[in-house]
Amino acid sequence: MSIVVVAAVIVSDGRVLAAQRAEPPALAGGWEFPGGKVDPGEGEEEALLRECREELGVEISVGRRVGGDWPLSPGYVMRVWLATLQVGTPVAKEHLALRWLGPDEYFSVDWLGADLPVMEAVADLLGQD
Image 1: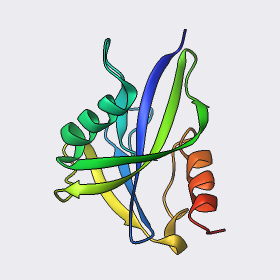
Image 2: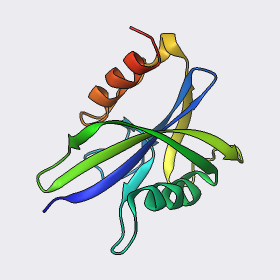
Image 3: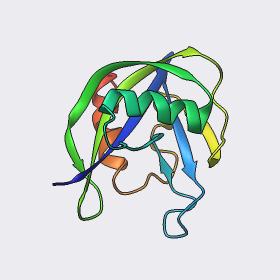
């Protein structure tokens, strides 16, 4: 059984929120969608809400799921949802930086290998090439 990691593609006015990893060293500096592991006894959407509170200091509304299980390192899968901000302004509490990327900037950051195909799928969903 795989360990599930959840991630939020927070969308605002056609822009998506990208977060730059601070750790571990092998991933530091790469860009990802915010999220994290689902704790035992926790639902996936519940974990997503918690992670966004902890990492960004915001409340989100969870929307539609993006794709199925996205492969991560062996033994891990990522499940991704579109989301919108409900309360707060995102702050980089656990990341090096945050950036709002407009449609012409979606691929202007160095996405981590697992997040790049997600961004490609999201660009298609949002009607961008």
